[in-house]
Image (cartoon, rainbow over all chains, first blue to last red; front, side):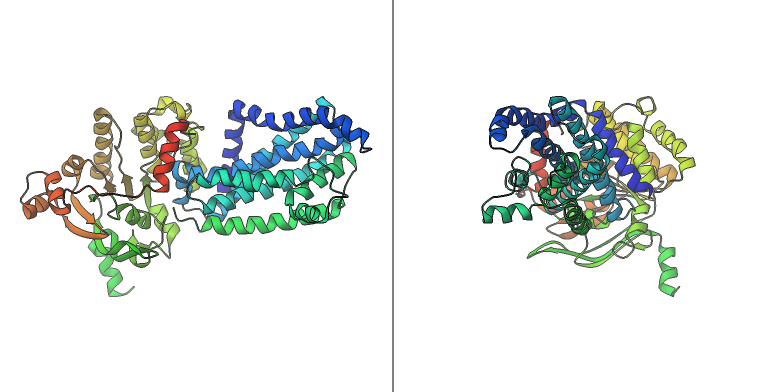
Length: 247
Length: 275
């Protein structure tokens, strides 16, 4: 029990001690919000879709969570050779508990990032339903858990950072762009639609958007169920792969 | 308890390796090796690059599973009883395994929690170990502010926190200046003499092995080619220094190795200032 807590605590300490990293990782979601919000806003409005800031807000919140979570998970590759992980692998602690501590820690900081993006988005022009924020946070946590778990699962299979570029460009970026974070997903060509509905982030974005702005494509219940199920699956797979790490 | 179990405790071997083999696909890294280490011994495990030393140590420290053979550490089987084995040893890895963004104290505290040291005892044990390596006054400083030698000392303090019977040291003085190397070896010798801790180390600095080791095993191409004291090895090879004896046994040809994932990461690390 204690081991999980101390691993979780470690992630938090590392996060709060790096002001530069905290601020730096907020740059991207905010850039998207401001550039696309002001830039494409008029076009969106004219197309009869309403206020783009309202639409985009949840999308960039999910973006903040996605990248923070994946990074936290991918850290495992680096840690594996150079850091703390080796210390934990030789300790008399179960691999599963180590993975759980790291996942919960990574997911916590990713959720905190999401909340910060939410706050900053309201400064720029996003108007969420404030009463629904606690519910939105639940969806944020699910996204955070899923992607931290995914990051750890992937890193458990890689030996060095070579694959990292591939992962960022061919997995993470597509997951983000094809999630309905930036554009509405109704009335899209069939094939495209199918790809989007296979993307886990889609349900997360939809859930956050549904709670904070009332607009949802799949319905909150579907979003929640899908996210919970795939998160459990990914944590299971991640736990298994992590336990198989032979340094 | 059978007669064999009783005999085992009497023979005083803290590490026993029998017919240990490790195969990777079609490559045999460790080929049917056997050796043992006595309680309180300083044991040097030497060999050229690619000999299979690192693989062997990984198996001894439960990071890798053997293909076949047996490893018994402190009476526990390294495959079926991993956690008991893990509690029995401490280790200082070749590459840093400290968390740079935590303080010295916090790094120690982590170890204390992972090794189940009771909460009441934690603070006093941590301070005791930090005193031993002369880092008490830096306990609340972030590890990233430490020099290489200080980090190594901290790793030693941390590895011993749970009072293990065995201490594994993988290239413990690599990259350190002579003063620090001397300092570290005086700590280690102390541990062996006064605490009866078994020291198992590898090094490329053969003068260290010559100076400090009670017993030496030399590994090459997956096999153990010689085990003995420094004197025995010098006598068997007709040489005057361990380095000469070593080269006589393993040849003076440079061993080529493929860069491992670790080497690539080390390269990156140089570029990224360790991040």
